[in-house]
Length: 516
Image 1 (cartoon, one colour):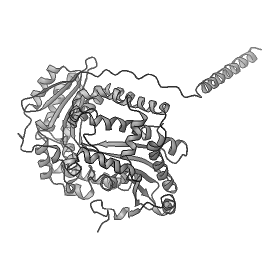
Image 2 (tube, helix red, strand yellow; image 1 turned 45 degrees about the horizontal axis):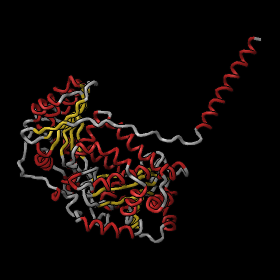
Image 3 (cartoon, helix red, strand yellow; image 1 turned 30 degrees about the vertical axis):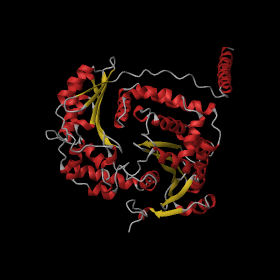
Image 4 (cartoon, rainbow, N blue to C red; image 1 turned 30 degrees about the horizontal axis):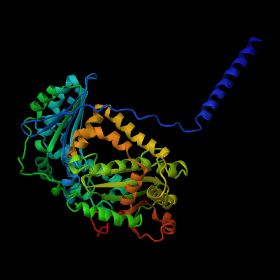
């Protein structure tokens, strides 16, 4: 009898658990509403400038014995020639590969002993060297960091090793549909060279090019040293002077101005010209052309929409120097991106992955520059559905300017942005990165305070206006086995011109993208 009661008790427990689970499932049949946005305490940023012209920014965060330090150089790939594409990133990366007194191995061993990391690299608009370290080891860590920045050896052996590694990685990536789509878009749609370089440009870079780039731009008045974490402003000033006070300065010999940047020289427009062009763009069809990079026998096809967007004023936050023009562009743009392709519940992912199972994921993003931004969507699918996915992408883009954007969809996407922003600022590394981004655009760190309010003020009308003024005239780029989706592509886009370039014939340095 005891055994039977025991069995009954266990059965009842199981039934109870199943019932509770069912109640939970039915209780969540309606999506919960997002909570009120949490306030984010933006820490005070203290600034001072050393005698050599180096600006130093400090955020004091006592309590956790960690410090993030970054030297941000306000020059990146925009200042390299197309023939030497990849020069900025190679120059920055080599800083950690040996100095006049330490080999690359010795630097790595010293960092390991300190429990620190030292990273270096460059993007389109800036270069940088960053370190994360315990605060009680910061002095020794900065000695290593400053040695790397101020006394690089640029040994031929390290240059050749980095070149070999870069070429190996690039050669492999050029066989991957997703990478190829971004690679060709840089030239075809954005009118820029790839910041990571090409096979030819990486091969062309010599030691003298690296030394010249370093001497021209890794200078005090073109850099900002940022500290966040367990450090006081007084201590930061002392350490900055001790380790970076002798950083060189060109005294204006290589003065960098906006008009000297190759990336924007040909696209600076008057406000009247920009507004006039936007009105014309609004009348144009969404798609201008389709480019197919034919990659026979590829396992998948990459499908993307690409558009370079030019604007009146710098494309960033709340730049008071430009009368707030920037905020009218930046905030609607990032809310639009969150709505379209900024996460799992975004429209692209919903339509392509969740509803149809055509991809593991779909998204979109911006790459911001001074007077323009590069916008692109991204997804991969089987070759048989490449044309269908391209049509789905264009449909969702059109809906942003022509369809409805209900508040119960828009508000959660705004909340995603403000939530991510707040979480990023909670870490020293995240805050350092955010400040570096602002300084790269010559903007005040006070702009951190405008982010939350700027996002929450964006309306459905703002998003629709941005989409109407900026998407039309874009390109669809597909990298995959053209023989499989050729007929379907022609059927779905009968009026759009299609250019086809075989992957083994591709040369993005040529006007027609083909090797001669």
